[in-house]
Image 1 (cartoon, rainbow, N blue to C red):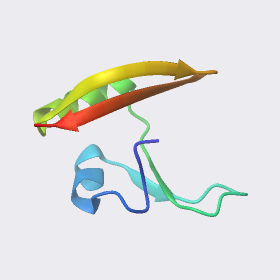
Image 2: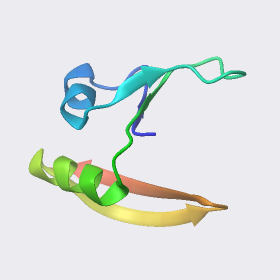
Image 3: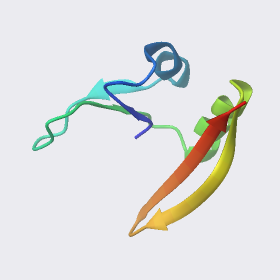
Length: 67
């Protein structure tokens, strides 16, 4: 998952993300099939930098900042 329904559509398009609604969720999300490394490289090319990273159960979360 790389974004929600309020994410920048141009950035989501650049990442190759697809907008979807999962059963039981009351919101839309953007999803990619790329490995995290690929997505992070693309975001770096757009000026984003990783600020922090953590694990929540079996989920990894990256916090980025655009310079």
